[in-house]
Length: 364
Image (cartoon, rainbow, N blue to C red; front, top):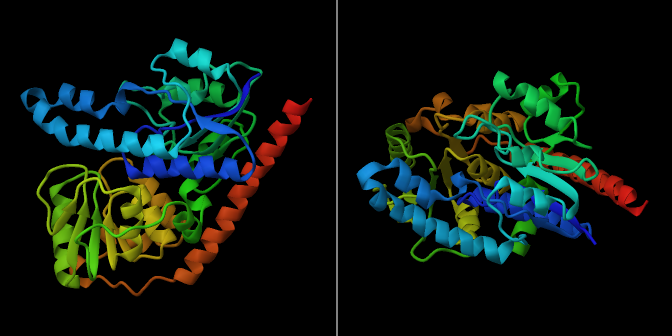
């Protein structure tokens, strides 16, 4: 007998957004009584230790140390939080594993972005799945606006095999509609849960040594520009600094090196202000009504811009705000919360309708 739902996502990328969005989607299926698990397919980019060793020359072993520590911590978090299949690492093993599921779901951040080899990863196009398997996407992201011309025809052919399509950004919906395909824009899975629901599932805990008011810095792509802006902003606000950074790079204030998921959520909820270049850093700031500034990364900033635009907060980009003149009281949180609730409801409805559709098909 086949398993029910296999989910393909970038669930093994060692960062908080990856694991928390994966958990939220799994939780949504569970709340509907659906047996779902993550297809534990690992691509080379999901192994940060090997990648750091390969790209850092003679300093590779030293620079790989923090990534190795982080990878080990996230693997433990993932094992405790997610249901996963046996692990596979090549296309033939993946093809055999996909045949074990009646339904396949693709979703999450950057699953349809171009990888380091210049191509979209075929696993997330479900190229190895049979025609008989029900296929859909939930909150899949291209990671940028549009699709490279060299991948357009291949992607269009793959997407045409999906039974239902949903994406995280409106630009992704436009791309699919240009291919003649119907699609819906839904929320990132972390927004399927309310703040209260998150805290019911992952109880927030204060990290040791974090007291009083602080500015939280969540920086995934360290740069001098980010450091300059955040230093000026924190000085202007007169706040202590707490940083979450995936490196041993010297930072202002207190640096928390890979805090637990419980601590991660607590830090976003209790911060006076958040400075971040992360999509999910922005998403949790919105969800917890924590004032923030988006210091856009050099690559794939479209994701951050899209979520800000969706909630009418385009002005929270650092290029629009002088660090010495930040205001933390100019958020219309009532409007944001209303939009979050409406978008959560419509996204949940899409998922429920999809479950009803594939359940009816499997019952025939």
